[in-house]
Length: 195
Image (cartoon, rainbow, N blue to C red; front, side, top):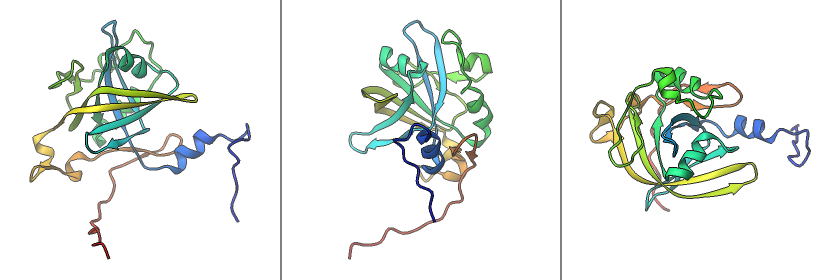
């Protein structure tokens, strides 16, 4: 037996279903600055790599949030990885702050200058991805944002043989409802040769 959820039925909450089954989702903890100079720090769990060459990442803003407004105004943003020790702060930054409030400042989150973009990064995040706006697409009640990756910074203590280590990154993920995923158990599977 299976329950069928017809997403055309107004009583079906497709968002709640999708966020419960498309799991785990990486978290883009995005720093941005508005044209008024006010900073914003907010987690977005609709985030992924969109293109390998040239490197492009994507995130989706469900509704027109401060992050989206800032990125469209200033054309730059930074994605910060949410490690296990930063989970509570990332969650706290998801509260509905007034646009005039800088979440990082209010929550005591230390920022530092980025390498190539005029937006700071989260100092305690092990990885940051500095981006320039590539394009955005309105999709229903959401906006898909694509960012050209200009630089990726990784703390030296998170590198093993020049490659980021999952054991050092300890990334959190979003699941359904108020559920978060701790760093995953890592298994190694060699990709098969073409038959």
